[in-house]
Length: 331
Image (cartoon, rainbow, N blue to C red; front, side, top):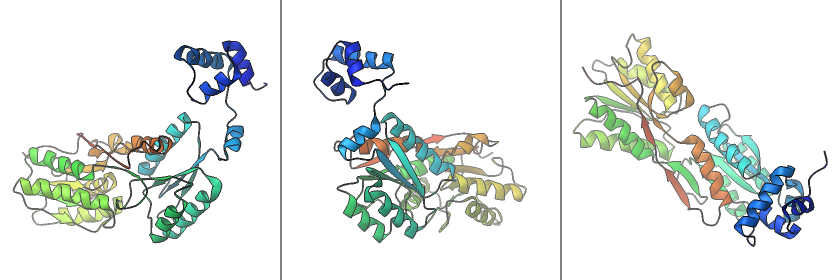
């Protein structure tokens, strides 16, 4: 089927090709009524822009690169899904690479993509060693970058993250409100600022309530670490009655450790996670957790690229406590 041209849209709308071009490229100059008439004509005729030609004329590729730490976890996939959805709205294509937390591979991918393959770059939970940061600083003028969920926030590229402190504090206060007085915190990766912020939120909540802190430090955002830490907690002579976990996967590991020792969740142990991955609602009982707006974080990162230079330098998104079946009051 022959491609519909701008001239055909102009004839259908009763206006000039220049006006049609301005409207379709979202440039000023047409009245509201004319704009609606042009868009309606384009829809009737089935007009589709020739993106390849547009990018060639502008010296751009039309591609946005995404380098993510993982493509197997629900956490990363939810963020990438938000990125892809918003890029589709913006009529941009995406080129995705996964590094699986290999710093050398990450720097190589960044160098390859920013060397002319893509117009902009999105990094999801990257390692960002000194070599990668130096490379990003060098390529920033020609390839803008936004980092989603950085390990550290004192970096040059703009960032999108959540209120890790507030979310963890709210989770802990939820357990305090249920009457728990022995509340443990199973920490995440020690090299992540998000882990430190979640630990601070927990500490402040229990201290303000006059309760002792009980921390299992230096872990990882994994089920294996949660199971290991949970086993150590429930085998104590006086175990905690509740656990605030630094991630959903940690929380699931804690729950499995408790059940492996014959304990019931939440009858014997209440557990709160952090993420609200899709599986959190699929379990029985459903996991009480702190929701990170993962899909919206991806959407926001794309908008920070496409809306430049008016976008904020850094964005901190709110979290939400989702109460399900793994917490209950002390009897």
